[in-house]
Length: 396
Image (tube, rainbow, N blue to C red):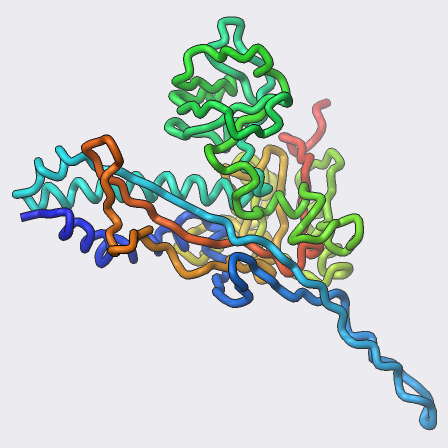
């Protein structure tokens, strides 16, 4: 007979390992290339010493001259807070009782819940990986006259079922914002519908932001954070110019020369070797068109996690839905580490229980948790092309 105790044992002994592997490896091609570590964690923070430049104590002197002046390697300390990543699911008491005498029925129930949790977690991990850490999903550009839906600048970070907050400038990220559930995303017209019906605040409109629930400035520092954030790991870029990644923001037509120029710059000036290119799927298709137009062979690269993609000179070119439009990131994944206070685990109470009754409801909930933060040892060694034209040549 299936009981809550046997359900908990299944979650701990059977599902946890599978879920952790799915979230660490299969969530996103880029995440699968990044190493994980539990070092350099002090309390709730990560403190990582990063080298600056090279050792200056090298020189050539005359035979009887003084030896080179000792100039030790310079370092700075990166400090960042471990982010709290949670994933929750619930099952009703009725569902548990209905499958109490059917092991296969209960297994199917848990399988459905786990697949749903993994799908939602993979989506949000992939989104965070290319974000800034702010939790901002989109910017509102217009609202319909009947106040029943909003138009946004991009829907790449939005999906049905997400619980989100709308913030106006007047809210100033106030904690009293009302949560809405997204019911439909029109990806052609860039419109978002929620269960709110009508938005009573007349100030919700152009320039307002949509944030993931509970996540304002609480997410991991993703790739775009290296470029957009003024402060990185406790250091101001204005004080440490070498923290600034390389960016080409001029209107550019996609070509091998464009890509190679960034790769060469990073290698010659930032001592960084690009081994991963992330872009939008439309730009990846454009690159395939470019290779075909110039009769280039299309190479294929196989990545950790079983991912396959086309390659440029052996460097994988990955199309990712969470990369901003017209953008290409050129990265050295060896510079990135996902620091974590242990792997994914179930949140338990003082009695070790992970399935807990929701107060006032005939239902139980379980919470998956991980405390982690993404750190780049060499932010200045990463590159970005941010204004790529959607055609190979200018229209005549």
